[in-house]
Amino acid sequence: MQLVCDQFQETGDPAFSKRVKEVSESGLERCYQCLTCTLSCPVAFAMDYPPHQIVRMVQLGLKEQVLRSSTIWICASCLSCVTRCPNEIDIPHLMDTLHQIALHEGVAAKEPAVAMFHEAFLAPIKKYGRQYEAMMTIGYMLRARQFSPKDLLNNALLGFKMITKRKLKLLPPHSIKGAKEIRGIFEKTEERGK
Image: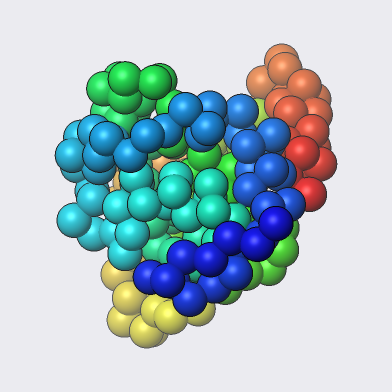
């Protein structure tokens, strides 16, 4: 079965479509392109493809376009689309699934800073079971490597002020009681995305 969408000039990959449907369990087959998700989305203006179009592209198996789009990284997961969708399609979960697949397959994102922030944000949660802002910030800055010395100095001064006002903890937090289970969740979701 070959699907072709003239607008994107790519042959569809039914295996990709099937994989995304199975992993995301978002109910994509119920979408009939009413555009409610796009009209509800507060960040649709910043996306290269609106949410309804991403859903359609996944249905058509347009793997490269979907995984390289900025939309999957820009989604704010605000749930506006889900609450208004007549078929209760979980688009934020779909977007999470897509960017996990993109990370796993090493697909370069159009929004590399967002992808780097995503990885930096999740790293402390995976390690401690909760957020550790100092580790997240340093992790992001090391991944991004696009800060000037002046930016680094300004961030260090801001960090120092936050530490002195007890808004930012210098030492890592104690792991929470269920940290081991949270690591297990990460491992399972990483396996499902493969």
